[in-house]
Image (cartoon, rainbow, N blue to C red; front, side, top):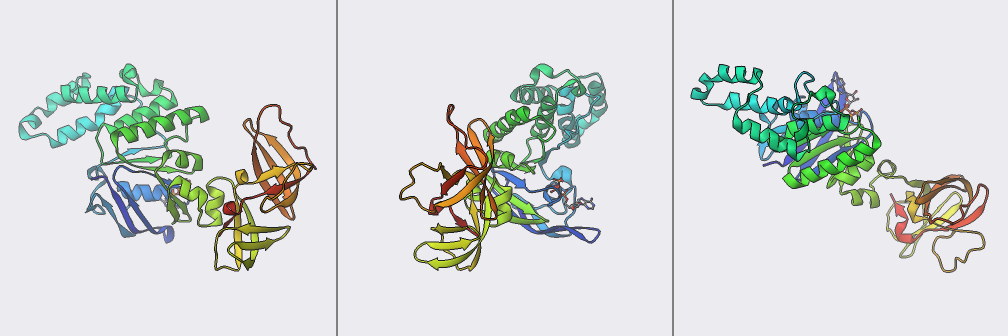
Length: 374
Ligand code: ATP
Protein backbone atom coordinates (compact mmCIF):
# COMPACT_ATOMS: atom_id res chain seq x y z
CA UNK A 1 0.00 0.00 0.00
CA UNK A 2 1.50 3.33 -1.03
CA UNK A 3 -0.74 5.86 0.67
CA UNK A 4 1.04 8.35 2.95
CA UNK A 5 -0.47 10.06 5.97
CA UNK A 6 1.26 12.78 7.93
CA UNK A 7 -0.52 13.62 11.18
CA UNK A 8 0.27 16.69 13.27
CA UNK A 9 3.90 16.65 12.22
CA UNK A 10 6.10 19.11 14.10
CA UNK A 11 9.86 19.37 13.75
CA UNK A 12 12.09 21.65 15.77
CA UNK A 13 15.77 22.29 15.12
CA UNK A 14 17.48 23.73 18.19
CA UNK A 15 14.20 25.20 19.43
CA UNK A 16 13.24 26.64 16.02
CA UNK A 17 10.05 25.22 14.51
CA UNK A 18 10.75 24.10 10.93
CA UNK A 19 7.36 22.36 10.78
CA UNK A 20 4.29 23.21 12.78
CA UNK A 21 1.41 20.74 12.88
CA UNK A 22 1.57 19.57 9.25
CA UNK A 23 -1.23 17.25 8.11
CA UNK A 24 -1.23 15.48 4.74
CA UNK A 25 -3.34 12.65 3.40
CA UNK A 26 -1.86 11.36 0.16
CA UNK A 27 -3.74 8.68 -1.75
CA UNK A 28 -2.16 5.60 -3.25
CA UNK A 29 -1.05 6.34 -6.82
CA UNK A 30 -1.34 10.08 -6.38
CA UNK A 31 1.22 12.59 -7.67
CA UNK A 32 1.42 15.05 -4.82
CA UNK A 33 3.55 18.21 -4.81
CA UNK A 34 4.85 20.15 -1.81
CA UNK A 35 5.17 23.72 -3.04
CA UNK A 36 6.45 26.79 -1.27
CA UNK A 37 9.22 29.35 -1.02
CA UNK A 38 12.70 28.54 0.23
CA UNK A 39 12.81 27.58 3.92
CA UNK A 40 9.08 26.80 4.25
CA UNK A 41 9.72 23.22 5.34
CA UNK A 42 9.20 21.15 2.17
CA UNK A 43 12.45 19.19 2.41
CA UNK A 44 12.06 18.64 6.16
CA UNK A 45 8.58 17.17 5.56
CA UNK A 46 9.97 14.85 2.90
CA UNK A 47 12.98 13.86 5.02
CA UNK A 48 10.62 12.97 7.90
CA UNK A 49 8.58 10.78 5.53
CA UNK A 50 11.76 9.12 4.22
CA UNK A 51 13.04 8.60 7.77
CA UNK A 52 16.17 10.76 7.48
CA UNK A 53 14.74 13.15 10.07
CA UNK A 54 12.99 12.16 13.29
CA UNK A 55 9.85 14.28 13.98
CA UNK A 56 9.68 16.20 17.26
CA UNK A 57 6.04 15.07 17.40
CA UNK A 58 3.43 13.64 15.07
CA UNK A 59 2.91 10.41 13.20
CA UNK A 60 3.82 9.26 9.70
CA UNK A 61 1.95 6.36 8.14
CA UNK A 62 2.90 4.58 4.94
CA UNK A 63 -0.02 2.38 3.97
CA UNK A 64 -1.69 1.71 7.29
CA UNK A 65 1.59 1.30 9.17
CA UNK A 66 3.09 3.98 11.44
CA UNK A 67 6.74 4.21 10.38
CA UNK A 68 8.20 6.65 12.96
CA UNK A 69 10.40 3.98 14.47
CA UNK A 70 11.25 2.21 11.19
CA UNK A 71 14.67 3.06 9.65
CA UNK A 72 14.78 4.68 6.18
CA UNK A 73 15.95 1.54 4.35
CA UNK A 74 12.86 -0.37 5.55
CA UNK A 75 10.23 2.25 4.71
CA UNK A 76 9.97 1.17 1.08
CA UNK A 77 10.52 4.71 -0.23
CA UNK A 78 12.64 5.50 -3.30
CA UNK A 79 14.36 8.88 -3.18
CA UNK A 80 15.57 11.14 -5.98
CA UNK A 81 17.66 14.12 -4.94
CA UNK A 82 18.35 17.48 -6.59
CA UNK A 83 22.07 16.61 -6.70
CA UNK A 84 21.39 13.11 -8.22
CA UNK A 85 23.81 11.57 -5.63
CA UNK A 86 25.16 9.00 -8.11
CA UNK A 87 28.39 7.04 -7.63
CA UNK A 88 30.79 8.72 -10.09
CA UNK A 89 33.21 5.75 -10.20
CA UNK A 90 30.46 3.34 -11.24
CA UNK A 91 28.86 3.07 -14.63
CA UNK A 92 25.14 3.56 -15.26
CA UNK A 93 24.33 -0.13 -14.88
CA UNK A 94 26.25 -0.45 -11.62
CA UNK A 95 24.60 2.64 -10.14
CA UNK A 96 21.16 1.21 -10.80
CA UNK A 97 22.10 -2.35 -9.79
CA UNK A 98 23.85 -1.33 -6.57
CA UNK A 99 20.94 -1.16 -4.13
CA UNK A 100 19.17 -4.09 -5.76
CA UNK A 101 22.28 -6.22 -5.32
CA UNK A 102 22.64 -5.21 -1.68
CA UNK A 103 18.95 -5.86 -1.06
CA UNK A 104 19.15 -9.30 -2.60
CA UNK A 105 22.27 -10.15 -0.63
CA UNK A 106 20.62 -9.03 2.60
CA UNK A 107 17.45 -11.00 2.00
CA UNK A 108 18.95 -14.14 0.45
CA UNK A 109 18.65 -17.46 2.24
CA UNK A 110 21.45 -19.32 3.98
CA UNK A 111 22.46 -21.36 0.94
CA UNK A 112 22.87 -18.34 -1.25
CA UNK A 113 24.47 -16.41 1.60
CA UNK A 114 27.21 -19.01 1.52
CA UNK A 115 27.87 -17.79 -1.97
CA UNK A 116 28.10 -14.17 -0.85
CA UNK A 117 31.84 -13.92 -1.40
CA UNK A 118 31.48 -15.36 -4.87
CA UNK A 119 28.80 -12.75 -5.59
CA UNK A 120 30.90 -9.88 -4.32
CA UNK A 121 33.82 -11.14 -6.40
CA UNK A 122 31.54 -11.37 -9.41
CA UNK A 123 30.39 -7.80 -8.84
CA UNK A 124 34.01 -6.71 -8.80
CA UNK A 125 34.40 -8.47 -12.13
CA UNK A 126 31.30 -6.69 -13.40
CA UNK A 127 29.06 -9.77 -13.30
CA UNK A 128 25.60 -9.75 -11.74
CA UNK A 129 22.99 -12.45 -11.25
CA UNK A 130 20.79 -12.87 -14.31
CA UNK A 131 17.63 -11.65 -12.53
CA UNK A 132 19.32 -8.40 -11.46
CA UNK A 133 20.78 -7.89 -14.93
CA UNK A 134 17.35 -8.34 -16.52
CA UNK A 135 15.63 -5.98 -14.10
CA UNK A 136 18.25 -3.26 -14.41
CA UNK A 137 18.28 -3.42 -18.20
CA UNK A 138 14.47 -3.27 -18.27
CA UNK A 139 14.38 -0.14 -16.15
CA UNK A 140 17.22 1.46 -18.15
CA UNK A 141 15.29 0.78 -21.32
CA UNK A 142 12.26 2.35 -19.67
CA UNK A 143 14.12 5.61 -19.00
CA UNK A 144 15.78 5.32 -22.43
CA UNK A 145 19.28 4.81 -21.10
CA UNK A 146 19.92 1.17 -22.06
CA UNK A 147 22.41 2.34 -24.69
CA UNK A 148 24.42 4.05 -21.93
CA UNK A 149 24.60 1.14 -19.48
CA UNK A 150 28.38 0.86 -19.51
CA UNK A 151 29.10 4.59 -19.46
CA UNK A 152 30.40 6.28 -16.29
CA UNK A 153 27.77 8.59 -14.80
CA UNK A 154 30.33 11.42 -14.79
CA UNK A 155 30.25 11.21 -18.60
CA UNK A 156 26.50 11.88 -18.84
CA UNK A 157 24.49 15.08 -19.29
CA UNK A 158 22.46 16.47 -16.37
CA UNK A 159 19.19 15.11 -17.79
CA UNK A 160 20.72 11.66 -18.33
CA UNK A 161 22.12 11.65 -14.78
CA UNK A 162 18.70 12.54 -13.44
CA UNK A 163 17.19 9.62 -15.36
CA UNK A 164 19.80 7.29 -13.81
CA UNK A 165 18.78 8.57 -10.37
CA UNK A 166 15.14 7.94 -11.26
CA UNK A 167 15.93 4.42 -12.55
CA UNK A 168 17.90 3.69 -9.38
CA UNK A 169 14.93 4.65 -7.23
CA UNK A 170 12.38 2.80 -9.38
CA UNK A 171 14.31 -0.45 -9.72
CA UNK A 172 13.66 -1.09 -6.02
CA UNK A 173 9.91 -1.04 -6.75
CA UNK A 174 9.22 1.34 -3.85
CA UNK A 175 5.71 1.92 -2.55
CA UNK A 176 6.41 5.65 -2.53
CA UNK A 177 8.68 7.75 -4.72
CA UNK A 178 10.07 10.88 -3.05
CA UNK A 179 11.60 13.56 -5.27
CA UNK A 180 13.32 16.60 -3.81
CA UNK A 181 13.65 19.43 -6.37
CA UNK A 182 14.75 16.86 -8.96
CA UNK A 183 14.70 19.24 -11.92
CA UNK A 184 16.25 22.39 -10.52
CA UNK A 185 19.75 21.64 -11.85
CA UNK A 186 18.51 21.30 -15.41
CA UNK A 187 18.12 24.00 -18.00
CA UNK A 188 14.64 25.29 -18.89
CA UNK A 189 14.11 23.13 -22.00
CA UNK A 190 15.30 19.93 -20.36
CA UNK A 191 13.14 20.65 -17.34
CA UNK A 192 10.09 20.61 -19.59
CA UNK A 193 11.09 17.30 -21.17
CA UNK A 194 11.88 15.72 -17.79
CA UNK A 195 8.54 16.90 -16.37
CA UNK A 196 6.80 14.91 -19.09
CA UNK A 197 9.07 11.89 -18.60
CA UNK A 198 8.48 11.80 -14.83
CA UNK A 199 4.74 12.28 -15.21
CA UNK A 200 4.51 9.54 -17.86
CA UNK A 201 6.46 7.08 -15.71
CA UNK A 202 4.47 7.96 -12.60
CA UNK A 203 1.20 7.37 -14.44
CA UNK A 204 2.40 4.16 -16.11
CA UNK A 205 3.52 2.65 -12.83
CA UNK A 206 0.77 4.24 -10.72
CA UNK A 207 3.37 4.90 -8.04
CA UNK A 208 2.55 7.27 -5.18
CA UNK A 209 4.87 10.22 -5.72
CA UNK A 210 5.70 13.17 -3.49
CA UNK A 211 7.50 15.92 -5.34
CA UNK A 212 9.13 18.91 -3.63
CA UNK A 213 9.50 22.11 -5.61
CA UNK A 214 9.52 25.88 -5.20
CA UNK A 215 8.49 26.26 -8.86
CA UNK A 216 4.73 26.74 -9.04
CA UNK A 217 4.60 26.00 -12.78
CA UNK A 218 6.31 22.66 -12.16
CA UNK A 219 3.92 21.73 -9.35
CA UNK A 220 0.81 22.87 -11.22
CA UNK A 221 1.71 21.13 -14.47
CA UNK A 222 2.67 17.79 -12.92
CA UNK A 223 0.75 17.13 -9.73
CA UNK A 224 -2.74 15.74 -9.10
CA UNK A 225 -2.81 17.78 -5.89
CA UNK A 226 -0.56 20.40 -4.41
CA UNK A 227 0.07 21.42 -0.80
CA UNK A 228 1.20 25.04 -0.58
CA UNK A 229 3.47 25.57 2.42
CA UNK A 230 4.67 28.71 4.16
CA UNK A 231 6.72 29.09 7.33
CA UNK A 232 6.46 25.45 8.34
CA UNK A 233 2.69 25.20 7.82
CA UNK A 234 0.39 23.91 5.11
CA UNK A 235 -1.66 26.85 3.86
CA UNK A 236 -3.90 25.04 1.36
CA UNK A 237 -4.21 21.67 -0.35
CA UNK A 238 -6.01 21.30 -3.63
CA UNK A 239 -5.89 20.38 -7.29
CA UNK A 240 -3.97 22.86 -9.46
CA UNK A 241 -7.24 24.30 -10.77
CA UNK A 242 -8.67 24.64 -7.25
CA UNK A 243 -5.64 26.52 -6.06
CA UNK A 244 -5.62 28.80 -9.06
CA UNK A 245 -9.31 29.60 -9.14
CA UNK A 246 -10.02 29.51 -5.38
CA UNK A 247 -6.87 30.54 -3.50
CA UNK A 248 -7.53 30.59 0.25
CA UNK A 249 -5.22 33.52 1.01
CA UNK A 250 -3.54 36.43 -0.82
CA UNK A 251 -0.20 34.62 -0.27
CA UNK A 252 -1.45 31.62 -2.29
CA UNK A 253 -3.04 33.84 -4.92
CA UNK A 254 0.34 35.45 -5.42
CA UNK A 255 2.43 32.33 -5.16
CA UNK A 256 0.29 30.24 -7.50
CA UNK A 257 0.29 32.26 -10.70
CA UNK A 258 0.20 36.04 -10.93
CA UNK A 259 -2.53 37.98 -9.16
CA UNK A 260 -3.71 41.52 -8.77
CA UNK A 261 -4.56 42.02 -5.10
CA UNK A 262 -6.56 45.11 -4.13
CA UNK A 263 -7.74 46.14 -0.68
CA UNK A 264 -11.44 46.95 -0.55
CA UNK A 265 -14.44 47.46 1.71
CA UNK A 266 -17.83 45.82 1.16
CA UNK A 267 -20.33 48.65 0.63
CA UNK A 268 -23.40 46.75 -0.54
CA UNK A 269 -24.78 43.21 -0.89
CA UNK A 270 -27.63 42.86 -3.33
CA UNK A 271 -27.18 39.35 -4.67
CA UNK A 272 -23.77 40.55 -5.76
CA UNK A 273 -21.15 41.99 -3.40
CA UNK A 274 -20.11 45.54 -4.18
CA UNK A 275 -16.58 46.38 -3.09
CA UNK A 276 -15.08 49.85 -3.06
CA UNK A 277 -11.39 50.65 -2.90
CA UNK A 278 -8.96 53.33 -3.96
CA UNK A 279 -9.76 54.13 -7.61
CA UNK A 280 -12.30 51.32 -8.18
CA UNK A 281 -15.77 49.98 -7.44
CA UNK A 282 -16.20 46.31 -8.35
CA UNK A 283 -19.08 43.88 -8.37
CA UNK A 284 -18.36 40.29 -7.35
CA UNK A 285 -20.69 37.32 -7.58
CA UNK A 286 -19.06 35.90 -4.48
CA UNK A 287 -20.81 36.22 -1.12
CA UNK A 288 -18.88 37.22 1.97
CA UNK A 289 -19.54 38.11 5.60
CA UNK A 290 -16.42 40.24 5.81
CA UNK A 291 -16.37 44.04 5.76
CA UNK A 292 -12.78 44.43 4.62
CA UNK A 293 -11.64 42.10 1.81
CA UNK A 294 -8.72 41.35 -0.47
CA UNK A 295 -9.95 41.47 -4.06
CA UNK A 296 -8.09 38.98 -6.27
CA UNK A 297 -8.15 39.37 -10.04
CA UNK A 298 -6.08 37.21 -12.39
CA UNK A 299 -4.35 39.12 -15.22
CA UNK A 300 -6.07 37.12 -17.98
CA UNK A 301 -9.52 37.93 -16.55
CA UNK A 302 -9.25 41.64 -17.30
CA UNK A 303 -10.42 42.79 -20.73
CA UNK A 304 -8.94 45.96 -22.16
CA UNK A 305 -10.85 48.43 -24.38
CA UNK A 306 -9.07 51.06 -26.39
CA UNK A 307 -10.38 54.57 -25.99
CA UNK A 308 -12.71 54.57 -28.98
CA UNK A 309 -13.70 50.90 -28.67
CA UNK A 310 -17.35 49.95 -28.01
CA UNK A 311 -17.90 48.70 -24.45
CA UNK A 312 -21.64 48.83 -23.88
CA UNK A 313 -23.27 46.64 -21.21
CA UNK A 314 -20.06 45.32 -19.72
CA UNK A 315 -19.62 44.72 -16.02
CA UNK A 316 -17.09 46.38 -13.80
CA UNK A 317 -15.84 49.06 -16.12
CA UNK A 318 -12.78 50.80 -14.69
CA UNK A 319 -10.40 53.35 -16.12
CA UNK A 320 -6.65 53.11 -16.25
CA UNK A 321 -3.48 54.25 -17.97
CA UNK A 322 -0.86 52.02 -19.62
CA UNK A 323 2.48 52.19 -17.83
CA UNK A 324 4.44 49.45 -19.58
CA UNK A 325 3.64 46.96 -22.32
CA UNK A 326 5.65 43.77 -22.71
CA UNK A 327 5.36 41.62 -25.79
CA UNK A 328 5.64 37.92 -24.79
CA UNK A 329 4.80 36.18 -28.08
CA UNK A 330 1.27 34.85 -27.79
CA UNK A 331 0.31 37.39 -25.12
CA UNK A 332 1.01 41.04 -24.35
CA UNK A 333 1.37 41.89 -20.67
CA UNK A 334 0.37 45.41 -19.65
CA UNK A 335 1.13 47.19 -16.39
CA UNK A 336 -1.81 49.53 -15.89
CA UNK A 337 -2.21 52.35 -13.36
CA UNK A 338 -5.60 52.32 -11.59
CA UNK A 339 -5.79 54.77 -8.69
CA UNK A 340 -2.79 53.93 -6.53
CA UNK A 341 -2.64 50.36 -7.87
CA UNK A 342 -0.55 48.94 -10.66
CA UNK A 343 -2.51 46.10 -12.27
CA UNK A 344 -1.07 43.36 -14.44
CA UNK A 345 -3.23 42.55 -17.47
CA UNK A 346 -2.58 39.77 -20.00
CA UNK A 347 -4.19 40.01 -23.41
CA UNK A 348 -3.87 37.41 -26.16
CA UNK A 349 -1.98 38.71 -29.14
CA UNK A 350 -2.48 37.90 -32.83
CA UNK A 351 0.19 38.94 -35.30
CA UNK A 352 -0.42 42.31 -36.91
CA UNK A 353 -2.39 43.68 -33.96
CA UNK A 354 -1.25 46.98 -32.54
CA UNK A 355 0.15 47.08 -29.03
CA UNK A 356 -0.94 49.85 -26.67
CA UNK A 357 1.79 52.32 -25.78
CA UNK A 358 2.92 53.95 -22.58
CA UNK A 359 0.57 56.69 -21.34
CA UNK A 360 -2.47 55.53 -23.37
CA UNK A 361 -5.76 55.83 -21.49
CA UNK A 362 -7.91 52.71 -21.54
CA UNK A 363 -10.97 51.12 -19.99
CA UNK A 364 -11.09 47.62 -18.55
CA UNK A 365 -13.84 45.22 -17.58
CA UNK A 366 -13.93 42.15 -15.35
CA UNK A 367 -16.76 39.62 -15.14
CA UNK A 368 -18.22 39.54 -11.57
CA UNK A 369 -17.52 35.76 -11.37
CA UNK A 370 -13.84 36.56 -11.89
CA UNK A 371 -13.67 38.99 -8.99
CA UNK A 372 -12.56 36.82 -6.06
CA UNK A 373 -12.93 38.00 -2.49
CA UNK A 374 -10.75 36.68 0.32
P1 ATP B 1 14.49 25.01 0.18
O1 ATP B 1 13.49 25.15 -0.93
O2 ATP B 1 15.39 26.20 0.30
O3 ATP B 1 15.22 23.70 0.18
P2 ATP B 1 12.61 24.05 2.20
O4 ATP B 1 11.23 24.56 2.04
O5 ATP B 1 12.88 22.68 1.70
O6 ATP B 1 13.64 25.09 1.57
P3 ATP B 1 13.66 23.12 4.71
O7 ATP B 1 14.98 22.70 4.14
O8 ATP B 1 12.70 22.07 5.05
O9 ATP B 1 12.95 24.17 3.74
O10 ATP B 1 13.95 24.03 5.98
C1 ATP B 1 12.92 24.52 6.82
C2 ATP B 1 13.54 25.34 7.94
O11 ATP B 1 14.27 24.48 8.81
C3 ATP B 1 14.52 26.37 7.44
O12 ATP B 1 14.38 27.52 8.25
C4 ATP B 1 15.87 25.73 7.66
O13 ATP B 1 16.86 26.69 7.91
C5 ATP B 1 15.61 24.88 8.90
N1 ATP B 1 16.45 23.66 8.90
C6 ATP B 1 16.40 22.65 8.04
N2 ATP B 1 17.29 21.68 8.35
C7 ATP B 1 17.92 22.10 9.48
C8 ATP B 1 18.94 21.56 10.33
N3 ATP B 1 19.48 20.36 10.08
N4 ATP B 1 19.33 22.30 11.40
C9 ATP B 1 18.77 23.50 11.68
N5 ATP B 1 17.79 24.07 10.94
C10 ATP B 1 17.37 23.38 9.84
